[in-house]
Length: 260
Image 1 (cartoon, one colour):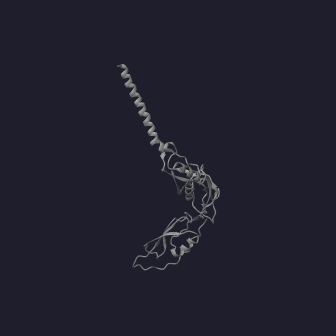
Image 2 (image 1 turned 135 degrees about the horizontal axis):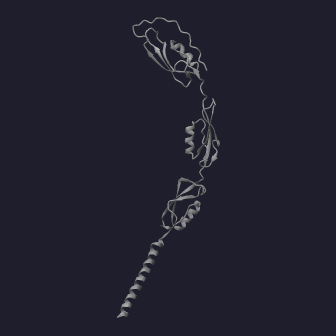
């Protein structure tokens, strides 16, 4: 009786082993047998990549428009593939692998910044993966904005190379002492003011009894204040009220010349 039970147990054990071995064999034959590791095409020329894929029965598609810069993979070689290579990434015959080719190392040139403002130049350097070095200013009357760069424009440089800039700034305007414009006719005083490089920017009119039309009655800046071509001069000019007859007045002498 005991021998019969042992025989049955042994038979069942043998049956399980045989069934497991058979299952493993047919799994590898039907499933793993038709799968293969994804090939590593990165760093290989196109001809070799095509040959590898042809031997494995895998389709190779090269994107003709997409290029990637690389410091490690020469131009024209495979630099990227859409499937990770290796034994853990199995594919079947007929699978398509898409690749992109290398454009070689990224070539960075110092851009042409001549005539641009300092702010625009710094922005363009950042767009080119460069950075600002030293920033110097010079009074060059015939030029505006950036006048030179170091390294010079067009120079091939590495990423994040500092570029020093020389910026031309306009000369400071000549300073003057504001004259007394009160009681002078606007039409007579305007050429005098503009002849010294200044400008009357704002003119307002106000009725003022007893003063003929066109006479300056208020001014800003006030008499004696420092003034330059960058400053805006404002004046208030008399205007007769309706019904009032204007009395002729002798012209006033020109104000003293603006002093430096």
